[in-house]
Image (cartoon, rainbow, N blue to C red; front, side, top):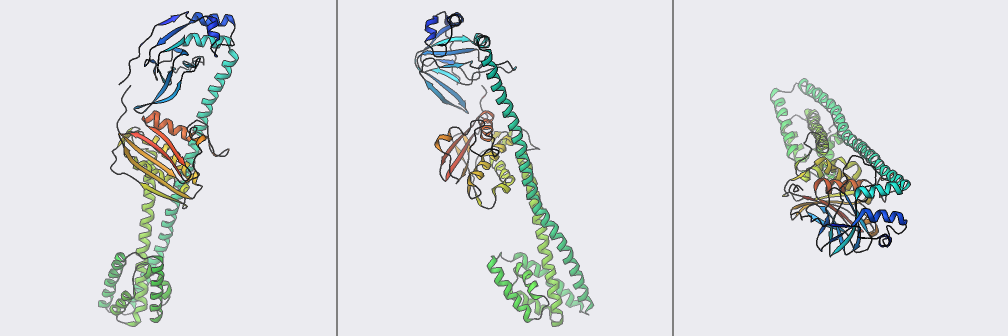
Length: 486
């Protein structure tokens, strides 16, 4: 429920120039300047508990605290977070930037101010305060405007460059990931062509060897049985496969199979054992046909294995393309109800080349979480920034843990790493724009600032950092319901 803003009458001319001089903000001004301020300002009394200004309202007044205690709060999701509490006489707030050049964007209060006990203020209108500053301190105003404009321009330029750099890195990573299965499919296809040609050749030799029709039919049936048995064979470890390959190689050597040790590797990879070879020998019958039959069956097995490799490779390409579509959200609405796990998984796929083999990824997902209202492409940018920071913090070795769970009416996404941690004196600054602990050229200091604005301003959530050596976690809090309109 929104607290009603009670307007309190402001009494003009209640402070003399000498009284104004006791405030540190005005102590260096001339008598004429103080007289002008006294004539254009007024005093206001606010009882304890009263709301002086509200975040988001048009900033049309400048306040200086004369007595009492005030608190400044900002809205984070459904909560009011206190940012400042003070009773220092002379502190100022409100329309503090009204003197900057009008850029067409309405200036609003950045926080809500409440009187914690009976408080008194000296008040000037934003227009009078702006006039005073621009007339009396033109050089300072030029410097401040240049600073503000420079920071905005720098932030925009670096942010755009950061997005382009991130896009380039992601594209390069995606191309690298796509190249591996594409190259594997190409190699398997070339090998498959050779194996099919070999099968045709062996089949021709078998047919030309005056093999009785019933025996040839038996060989064809045997081929199907062998392929089916290979498909159902249990998956062996590398050591088990090596031992089986030795056994098969010895059997083929004893039975004078040409290139037996090469064929043994094919049969071992298919999970076929000595019993299978003995059955093949029995069903072939004629010893003179065994060598060609074994080779023909080997070609059939290898052909099946190559087709499986091609299927796996093309499936990997398809998965990568789907992950890229999910990550970019290029065919989705800008705002929609989403399952956060889809964006997290697609981001992990896109960053796999950065994560590397030295980092173990642990996914502790609560799949019962409800969908949330969100801008998925923006949240994917948040996941990218947080995961990228975690990977860099671990320097290629460690554990990346992504956990999701529900807390009250919020979905929590926790992204943790086992890096050295963030020192206490830096924790409170990590979300500041342009602040970075990375070496020059390796960080812009905007990744976490952008992430904070996306989560807090764009989704009505919150993002906090918990860190100690070996356990650093960024926790993103996202509401499960649409935020109430103001």
